[in-house]
Length: 208
Image (cartoon, rainbow, N blue to C red; front, side, top):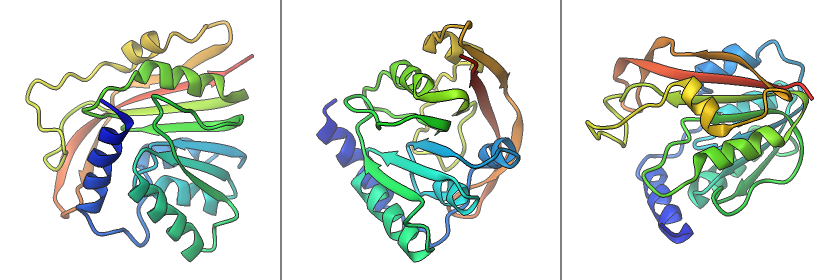
């Protein structure tokens, strides 16, 4: 699929829902990053912007990217509205074609799934290389299908965190897997429904 196809698809996904005024951060980000000292963060697939806003409020300098121009423009507006424009840089990237510049203390990729062509392993490998020494790469994937997901494919396959780590192929001499598990939580969808869902969590630290 072309970049145009990806932009059209994801612009449609975001435009089909009203813009959030104060989107919630992902639970797996807050439980992982609450105790970290603020630094530079990269949010891959920023979506509604809840993670970027949460990090910026805690002193992080955040580069937030998405393939959707709708998502990027909405986040830039939210950053201004919440007085965080000096801490959030929102950029549009097709991660299959371009990757944000810079080095980061934290890179987050929450639910970076797409029905379109994307070499996700290469993107996450680039994310690992974008870490500063002692930086963390947090990859949170779906481990089950929520009732409100755009993807209701009954044949959807969810690779384990260890499989994702193996696909990324970062050298264990320089990157260490600190967490690879599949916890369950109760999630709330955009329409207020709740459901039990499984997350696949991979946390990698750059050690050299």
